[in-house]
Length: 429
Image (cartoon, rainbow, N blue to C red; front, side, top):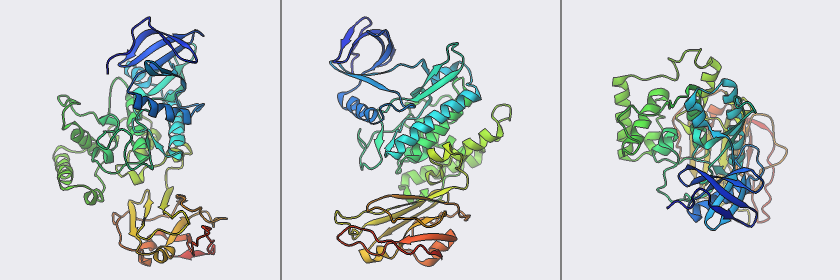
Protein backbone atom coordinates (compact mmCIF):
# COMPACT_ATOMS: atom_id res chain seq x y z
CA UNK A 1 0.00 0.00 0.00
CA UNK A 2 1.54 3.31 -1.06
CA UNK A 3 2.20 6.00 1.52
CA UNK A 4 -0.82 8.27 1.85
CA UNK A 5 0.75 11.43 3.32
CA UNK A 6 3.57 13.92 3.00
CA UNK A 7 5.01 16.28 5.61
CA UNK A 8 2.98 19.48 5.73
CA UNK A 9 -0.14 17.90 4.29
CA UNK A 10 -3.43 18.91 5.95
CA UNK A 11 -5.97 16.16 6.66
CA UNK A 12 -9.55 16.92 7.64
CA UNK A 13 -12.29 14.97 9.35
CA UNK A 14 -15.67 15.91 10.76
CA UNK A 15 -14.03 16.40 14.16
CA UNK A 16 -10.73 18.11 13.42
CA UNK A 17 -7.93 19.30 11.16
CA UNK A 18 -4.52 17.56 11.29
CA UNK A 19 -1.19 18.70 9.85
CA UNK A 20 1.36 15.99 9.09
CA UNK A 21 4.66 16.76 10.86
CA UNK A 22 6.81 13.66 10.39
CA UNK A 23 6.90 10.00 9.40
CA UNK A 24 7.19 7.66 12.38
CA UNK A 25 7.03 4.24 10.72
CA UNK A 26 5.75 2.78 7.50
CA UNK A 27 2.15 4.01 7.22
CA UNK A 28 2.34 5.74 10.63
CA UNK A 29 2.66 9.53 10.80
CA UNK A 30 2.99 12.15 13.49
CA UNK A 31 0.65 15.13 13.23
CA UNK A 32 -0.54 18.17 15.11
CA UNK A 33 -4.09 19.37 15.44
CA UNK A 34 -5.72 22.77 15.94
CA UNK A 35 -5.59 22.32 19.72
CA UNK A 36 -1.75 22.14 19.44
CA UNK A 37 -1.89 18.53 20.51
CA UNK A 38 0.32 15.83 19.02
CA UNK A 39 -1.51 12.86 17.53
CA UNK A 40 -0.65 9.82 15.41
CA UNK A 41 -2.26 8.96 12.06
CA UNK A 42 -2.22 5.30 11.11
CA UNK A 43 -2.92 4.10 7.57
CA UNK A 44 -3.82 0.56 6.50
CA UNK A 45 -6.35 -1.23 4.34
CA UNK A 46 -9.93 -0.09 4.97
CA UNK A 47 -10.85 -3.57 6.26
CA UNK A 48 -8.01 -3.60 8.77
CA UNK A 49 -8.69 -0.04 9.90
CA UNK A 50 -12.37 -0.79 10.43
CA UNK A 51 -11.50 -3.88 12.45
CA UNK A 52 -9.12 -1.99 14.73
CA UNK A 53 -11.58 0.91 15.01
CA UNK A 54 -14.29 -1.47 16.26
CA UNK A 55 -11.97 -2.96 18.88
CA UNK A 56 -10.79 0.43 20.13
CA UNK A 57 -14.31 1.81 20.29
CA UNK A 58 -15.30 -1.15 22.44
CA UNK A 59 -12.60 -0.20 24.95
CA UNK A 60 -13.01 3.53 24.68
CA UNK A 61 -11.70 5.23 27.79
CA UNK A 62 -9.66 2.26 29.01
CA UNK A 63 -6.68 3.62 30.93
CA UNK A 64 -4.25 1.00 29.60
CA UNK A 65 -5.26 0.81 25.93
CA UNK A 66 -4.20 3.49 23.47
CA UNK A 67 -7.11 5.83 22.73
CA UNK A 68 -8.80 6.27 19.38
CA UNK A 69 -9.33 10.01 18.89
CA UNK A 70 -10.83 10.28 15.43
CA UNK A 71 -11.30 8.56 12.09
CA UNK A 72 -10.47 10.15 8.73
CA UNK A 73 -12.34 8.84 5.71
CA UNK A 74 -10.23 10.37 2.91
CA UNK A 75 -7.61 9.08 2.91
CA UNK A 76 -8.73 6.39 5.40
CA UNK A 77 -6.73 6.48 8.63
CA UNK A 78 -7.10 6.28 12.38
CA UNK A 79 -6.23 9.28 14.54
CA UNK A 80 -4.64 7.88 17.69
CA UNK A 81 -3.32 9.12 21.01
CA UNK A 82 0.35 10.13 20.98
CA UNK A 83 2.74 8.81 23.63
CA UNK A 84 6.43 9.61 24.04
CA UNK A 85 7.94 6.36 22.70
CA UNK A 86 7.54 2.60 22.57
CA UNK A 87 9.13 0.13 24.98
CA UNK A 88 11.39 -1.35 22.29
CA UNK A 89 13.04 2.00 21.65
CA UNK A 90 13.34 2.66 25.37
CA UNK A 91 14.84 -0.75 26.17
CA UNK A 92 17.23 -0.59 23.21
CA UNK A 93 18.81 2.58 24.61
CA UNK A 94 19.31 1.08 28.07
CA UNK A 95 17.78 -1.61 30.30
CA UNK A 96 14.54 -0.39 31.86
CA UNK A 97 14.50 -0.14 35.65
CA UNK A 98 12.68 -2.80 37.63
CA UNK A 99 10.28 -0.17 38.96
CA UNK A 100 9.36 0.89 35.43
CA UNK A 101 9.01 -2.71 34.28
CA UNK A 102 6.50 -3.25 37.09
CA UNK A 103 4.55 -0.23 35.83
CA UNK A 104 4.58 -1.65 32.30
CA UNK A 105 3.67 -5.18 33.39
CA UNK A 106 0.77 -4.04 35.55
CA UNK A 107 -0.64 -1.86 32.76
CA UNK A 108 -0.35 -4.47 30.02
CA UNK A 109 -1.84 -7.21 32.22
CA UNK A 110 -4.73 -4.87 33.05
CA UNK A 111 -5.29 -4.30 29.32
CA UNK A 112 -5.06 -8.03 28.56
CA UNK A 113 -7.45 -8.90 31.36
CA UNK A 114 -10.05 -6.53 29.90
CA UNK A 115 -9.53 -7.89 26.38
CA UNK A 116 -9.66 -11.52 27.45
CA UNK A 117 -12.72 -11.13 29.66
CA UNK A 118 -14.47 -9.68 26.62
CA UNK A 119 -13.39 -12.57 24.41
CA UNK A 120 -10.65 -10.74 22.50
CA UNK A 121 -7.09 -11.97 21.93
CA UNK A 122 -4.53 -9.29 21.01
CA UNK A 123 -2.12 -11.75 19.24
CA UNK A 124 0.74 -9.24 18.83
CA UNK A 125 2.18 -8.47 22.27
CA UNK A 126 5.73 -7.18 21.85
CA UNK A 127 7.84 -4.24 23.09
CA UNK A 128 7.09 -1.99 20.12
CA UNK A 129 3.35 -2.35 20.75
CA UNK A 130 3.74 -1.02 24.29
CA UNK A 131 3.73 2.78 24.38
CA UNK A 132 5.19 4.85 27.21
CA UNK A 133 4.88 8.29 28.74
CA UNK A 134 7.55 9.80 30.98
CA UNK A 135 7.52 12.29 33.83
CA UNK A 136 8.40 15.95 33.23
CA UNK A 137 12.09 15.18 33.64
CA UNK A 138 11.83 12.49 30.97
CA UNK A 139 13.50 9.89 33.18
CA UNK A 140 10.74 7.87 34.85
CA UNK A 141 8.01 5.91 33.07
CA UNK A 142 4.68 7.00 34.51
CA UNK A 143 2.28 5.44 32.03
CA UNK A 144 2.19 2.44 29.71
CA UNK A 145 -0.49 1.52 27.18
CA UNK A 146 -1.14 -1.38 24.84
CA UNK A 147 -1.29 -0.43 21.16
CA UNK A 148 -1.99 -1.93 17.73
CA UNK A 149 -5.22 -3.91 17.97
CA UNK A 150 -5.32 -4.42 14.21
CA UNK A 151 -4.68 -8.14 14.60
CA UNK A 152 -7.00 -8.64 17.57
CA UNK A 153 -8.99 -11.83 17.32
CA UNK A 154 -12.40 -12.67 18.75
CA UNK A 155 -11.99 -15.89 20.68
CA UNK A 156 -15.40 -17.22 19.69
CA UNK A 157 -14.80 -16.92 15.96
CA UNK A 158 -13.96 -20.04 13.99
CA UNK A 159 -11.81 -18.14 11.48
CA UNK A 160 -9.33 -15.33 11.88
CA UNK A 161 -10.60 -11.95 10.66
CA UNK A 162 -7.52 -11.64 8.44
CA UNK A 163 -7.67 -15.16 7.01
CA UNK A 164 -6.80 -18.67 8.11
CA UNK A 165 -3.18 -18.45 6.89
CA UNK A 166 -2.48 -15.21 8.78
CA UNK A 167 0.51 -15.76 11.10
CA UNK A 168 0.00 -14.01 14.41
CA UNK A 169 2.61 -11.71 15.89
CA UNK A 170 6.37 -11.62 15.46
CA UNK A 171 7.88 -15.12 15.52
CA UNK A 172 10.25 -14.43 18.43
CA UNK A 173 7.29 -13.45 20.62
CA UNK A 174 4.83 -16.01 19.21
CA UNK A 175 3.61 -18.81 21.47
CA UNK A 176 4.78 -22.39 20.79
CA UNK A 177 1.23 -23.56 20.04
CA UNK A 178 0.85 -20.81 17.42
CA UNK A 179 4.25 -21.64 15.91
CA UNK A 180 3.20 -25.29 15.66
CA UNK A 181 -0.09 -24.44 14.00
CA UNK A 182 -2.14 -25.73 16.94
CA UNK A 183 -5.24 -24.14 18.41
CA UNK A 184 -4.40 -21.01 20.37
CA UNK A 185 -6.45 -18.81 22.65
CA UNK A 186 -5.97 -16.05 25.24
CA UNK A 187 -2.97 -17.87 26.73
CA UNK A 188 -0.99 -17.07 23.58
CA UNK A 189 -0.99 -13.43 24.74
CA UNK A 190 0.37 -14.49 28.12
CA UNK A 191 3.34 -16.26 26.51
CA UNK A 192 4.07 -13.21 24.36
CA UNK A 193 3.80 -10.99 27.44
CA UNK A 194 6.41 -13.11 29.23
CA UNK A 195 8.74 -13.09 26.22
CA UNK A 196 8.36 -9.33 26.04
CA UNK A 197 9.25 -8.93 29.72
CA UNK A 198 12.54 -10.80 29.25
CA UNK A 199 13.44 -8.35 26.48
CA UNK A 200 12.71 -5.42 28.78
CA UNK A 201 14.70 -6.87 31.69
CA UNK A 202 17.85 -7.21 29.58
CA UNK A 203 17.33 -4.41 27.11
CA UNK A 204 19.80 -3.34 24.41
CA UNK A 205 18.07 -5.40 21.72
CA UNK A 206 18.26 -8.77 23.49
CA UNK A 207 15.41 -11.21 22.75
CA UNK A 208 15.57 -14.56 24.49
CA UNK A 209 14.16 -16.62 21.61
CA UNK A 210 15.97 -14.87 18.79
CA UNK A 211 17.98 -17.52 16.89
CA UNK A 212 21.72 -17.24 16.50
CA UNK A 213 23.12 -14.82 13.96
CA UNK A 214 22.88 -16.02 10.40
CA UNK A 215 19.21 -17.03 10.52
CA UNK A 216 17.11 -14.34 8.88
CA UNK A 217 13.57 -13.61 9.99
CA UNK A 218 12.60 -14.09 6.32
CA UNK A 219 13.97 -17.64 6.33
CA UNK A 220 11.12 -20.19 6.12
CA UNK A 221 12.93 -22.16 8.85
CA UNK A 222 13.05 -19.18 11.22
CA UNK A 223 9.97 -20.29 13.25
CA UNK A 224 11.53 -23.74 13.72
CA UNK A 225 14.67 -22.09 15.13
CA UNK A 226 12.49 -20.06 17.51
CA UNK A 227 10.80 -23.29 18.65
CA UNK A 228 14.21 -24.77 19.36
CA UNK A 229 15.14 -21.82 21.55
CA UNK A 230 11.82 -22.10 23.39
CA UNK A 231 12.44 -25.78 24.07
CA UNK A 232 16.07 -25.13 25.02
CA UNK A 233 15.07 -22.69 27.75
CA UNK A 234 11.68 -23.98 28.88
CA UNK A 235 11.32 -27.50 27.43
CA UNK A 236 10.52 -30.22 26.95
CA UNK A 237 7.28 -29.81 25.04
CA UNK A 238 4.19 -31.46 26.57
CA UNK A 239 3.72 -35.08 25.53
CA UNK A 240 0.14 -34.30 24.58
CA UNK A 241 1.44 -32.23 21.64
CA UNK A 242 2.30 -35.50 19.88
CA UNK A 243 -1.38 -36.39 19.65
CA UNK A 244 -2.26 -33.00 18.18
CA UNK A 245 0.47 -32.54 15.56
CA UNK A 246 0.55 -33.82 12.02
CA UNK A 247 3.29 -36.27 11.06
CA UNK A 248 5.66 -33.62 9.68
CA UNK A 249 5.35 -31.32 12.70
CA UNK A 250 5.78 -34.23 15.10
CA UNK A 251 8.94 -35.24 13.24
CA UNK A 252 10.27 -31.66 13.45
CA UNK A 253 9.57 -31.55 17.17
CA UNK A 254 11.41 -34.83 17.69
CA UNK A 255 14.38 -33.46 15.74
CA UNK A 256 14.43 -30.39 17.97
CA UNK A 257 14.60 -32.54 21.09
CA UNK A 258 17.46 -34.58 19.60
CA UNK A 259 19.44 -31.41 18.79
CA UNK A 260 18.89 -30.05 22.29
CA UNK A 261 20.14 -33.31 23.80
CA UNK A 262 23.27 -33.00 21.67
CA UNK A 263 23.88 -29.28 22.22
CA UNK A 264 22.57 -28.95 25.77
CA UNK A 265 19.66 -27.02 27.21
CA UNK A 266 19.58 -23.62 28.89
CA UNK A 267 17.24 -24.32 31.74
CA UNK A 268 15.03 -21.40 32.75
CA UNK A 269 17.29 -18.48 33.62
CA UNK A 270 19.70 -20.80 35.47
CA UNK A 271 22.73 -18.78 34.37
CA UNK A 272 21.16 -15.45 35.23
CA UNK A 273 22.73 -13.82 38.25
CA UNK A 274 20.60 -12.35 41.01
CA UNK A 275 22.16 -8.97 40.23
CA UNK A 276 20.60 -9.15 36.76
CA UNK A 277 17.12 -10.37 37.71
CA UNK A 278 15.90 -10.88 41.27
CA UNK A 279 14.94 -14.48 42.19
CA UNK A 280 11.27 -13.55 42.62
CA UNK A 281 11.27 -11.97 39.16
CA UNK A 282 12.79 -15.13 37.68
CA UNK A 283 10.10 -17.15 39.40
CA UNK A 284 7.44 -14.84 38.00
CA UNK A 285 8.80 -15.25 34.46
CA UNK A 286 9.11 -19.02 34.75
CA UNK A 287 5.54 -19.26 35.96
CA UNK A 288 4.44 -17.50 32.77
CA UNK A 289 6.69 -19.28 30.28
CA UNK A 290 4.93 -22.65 30.27
CA UNK A 291 5.14 -24.49 26.94
CA UNK A 292 1.75 -26.00 27.69
CA UNK A 293 -0.84 -23.21 27.29
CA UNK A 294 -3.13 -24.96 29.77
CA UNK A 295 -0.56 -24.38 32.50
CA UNK A 296 -0.11 -20.65 31.99
CA UNK A 297 -1.77 -18.29 34.47
CA UNK A 298 -4.34 -15.81 33.26
CA UNK A 299 -3.76 -12.06 33.20
CA UNK A 300 -6.07 -11.69 36.18
CA UNK A 301 -4.23 -14.36 38.18
CA UNK A 302 -0.94 -12.58 37.52
CA UNK A 303 -2.43 -9.25 38.58
CA UNK A 304 -3.74 -10.79 41.77
CA UNK A 305 -0.47 -12.65 42.46
CA UNK A 306 -2.29 -15.96 42.68
CA UNK A 307 -0.98 -17.86 39.69
CA UNK A 308 0.74 -20.42 41.89
CA UNK A 309 -1.38 -23.38 42.96
CA UNK A 310 -4.50 -21.83 41.48
CA UNK A 311 -5.94 -23.88 38.69
CA UNK A 312 -9.11 -23.38 36.72
CA UNK A 313 -11.45 -25.85 35.12
CA UNK A 314 -13.38 -24.68 32.10
CA UNK A 315 -16.44 -26.55 30.95
CA UNK A 316 -18.11 -25.34 27.79
CA UNK A 317 -21.52 -26.73 26.88
CA UNK A 318 -23.79 -25.63 24.04
CA UNK A 319 -27.56 -25.60 24.15
CA UNK A 320 -30.31 -25.13 21.61
CA UNK A 321 -32.30 -21.90 21.65
CA UNK A 322 -34.92 -23.72 23.70
CA UNK A 323 -32.35 -24.70 26.28
CA UNK A 324 -32.09 -28.35 25.31
CA UNK A 325 -28.70 -30.03 25.31
CA UNK A 326 -27.54 -30.61 21.78
CA UNK A 327 -27.08 -34.26 20.86
CA UNK A 328 -23.57 -34.97 19.63
CA UNK A 329 -22.18 -31.88 21.33
CA UNK A 330 -18.57 -31.92 22.51
CA UNK A 331 -18.08 -31.38 26.20
CA UNK A 332 -14.61 -29.92 26.72
CA UNK A 333 -13.04 -29.68 30.13
CA UNK A 334 -9.71 -27.89 30.32
CA UNK A 335 -7.83 -28.04 33.57
CA UNK A 336 -5.01 -25.53 33.38
CA UNK A 337 -1.98 -26.48 35.39
CA UNK A 338 -2.58 -30.21 35.37
CA UNK A 339 -1.90 -30.86 31.72
CA UNK A 340 -5.36 -32.37 31.33
CA UNK A 341 -7.98 -31.93 28.71
CA UNK A 342 -11.01 -34.19 28.69
CA UNK A 343 -13.00 -34.45 25.49
CA UNK A 344 -16.31 -36.23 25.46
CA UNK A 345 -18.76 -36.45 22.61
CA UNK A 346 -22.23 -36.94 24.02
CA UNK A 347 -24.37 -39.59 22.40
CA UNK A 348 -27.55 -38.14 23.81
CA UNK A 349 -28.68 -35.33 26.04
CA UNK A 350 -29.52 -37.73 28.87
CA UNK A 351 -25.91 -38.94 28.90
CA UNK A 352 -24.51 -35.43 29.27
CA UNK A 353 -27.10 -34.55 31.89
CA UNK A 354 -25.57 -37.18 34.16
CA UNK A 355 -22.06 -35.76 33.88
CA UNK A 356 -20.41 -33.42 36.29
CA UNK A 357 -20.73 -29.84 35.03
CA UNK A 358 -18.41 -27.92 37.30
CA UNK A 359 -16.11 -28.23 40.26
CA UNK A 360 -15.47 -25.63 42.90
CA UNK A 361 -13.12 -25.36 45.83
CA UNK A 362 -14.72 -22.56 47.81
CA UNK A 363 -18.08 -24.13 48.69
CA UNK A 364 -21.38 -24.56 46.88
CA UNK A 365 -22.70 -21.97 44.49
CA UNK A 366 -25.87 -20.08 45.32
CA UNK A 367 -27.24 -20.41 41.81
CA UNK A 368 -26.87 -22.78 38.92
CA UNK A 369 -25.12 -21.80 35.67
CA UNK A 370 -26.83 -19.84 32.96
CA UNK A 371 -27.78 -21.58 29.74
CA UNK A 372 -24.85 -21.52 27.33
CA UNK A 373 -22.54 -20.03 29.95
CA UNK A 374 -18.87 -20.95 30.07
CA UNK A 375 -18.00 -21.75 33.65
CA UNK A 376 -14.57 -20.87 35.05
CA UNK A 377 -14.16 -21.99 38.63
CA UNK A 378 -10.98 -22.24 40.66
CA UNK A 379 -9.83 -25.34 42.42
CA UNK A 380 -6.67 -25.70 44.44
CA UNK A 381 -6.60 -29.49 44.68
CA UNK A 382 -3.10 -30.93 44.88
CA UNK A 383 -2.78 -33.50 42.12
CA UNK A 384 -0.11 -35.16 40.07
CA UNK A 385 0.62 -34.13 36.52
CA UNK A 386 -0.61 -36.34 33.72
CA UNK A 387 -0.66 -36.17 29.96
CA UNK A 388 -3.60 -38.54 29.60
CA UNK A 389 -5.72 -35.77 28.17
CA UNK A 390 -8.18 -37.43 25.82
CA UNK A 391 -10.67 -39.82 27.37
CA UNK A 392 -13.67 -41.52 25.87
CA UNK A 393 -15.87 -41.16 28.92
CA UNK A 394 -16.08 -40.04 32.50
CA UNK A 395 -15.86 -43.10 34.71
CA UNK A 396 -15.38 -42.41 38.41
CA UNK A 397 -11.72 -43.39 38.30
CA UNK A 398 -11.12 -40.55 35.84
CA UNK A 399 -12.13 -38.09 38.51
CA UNK A 400 -10.35 -39.46 41.56
CA UNK A 401 -7.31 -37.33 40.71
CA UNK A 402 -9.35 -34.27 41.63
CA UNK A 403 -9.69 -35.32 45.25
CA UNK A 404 -12.48 -33.82 47.31
CA UNK A 405 -14.56 -31.58 45.08
CA UNK A 406 -17.83 -29.81 45.45
CA UNK A 407 -19.78 -30.58 42.32
CA UNK A 408 -22.79 -29.59 40.31
CA UNK A 409 -24.62 -31.71 37.81
CA UNK A 410 -27.31 -31.05 35.27
CA UNK A 411 -30.60 -32.57 36.33
CA UNK A 412 -32.85 -31.57 33.50
CA UNK A 413 -33.18 -28.93 30.81
CA UNK A 414 -36.72 -28.57 29.61
CA UNK A 415 -38.18 -26.34 26.96
CA UNK A 416 -38.44 -23.52 29.48
CA UNK A 417 -34.62 -23.31 29.42
CA UNK A 418 -34.42 -22.96 33.18
CA UNK A 419 -31.56 -24.99 34.67
CA UNK A 420 -32.52 -26.71 37.91
CA UNK A 421 -30.20 -26.65 40.87
CA UNK A 422 -28.63 -29.85 42.09
CA UNK A 423 -28.04 -30.59 45.73
CA UNK A 424 -25.02 -28.72 47.05
CA UNK A 425 -23.58 -31.81 48.69
CA UNK A 426 -19.82 -32.21 48.55
CA UNK A 427 -19.05 -35.55 46.99
CA UNK A 428 -15.96 -37.68 47.20
CA UNK A 429 -15.34 -38.69 43.61
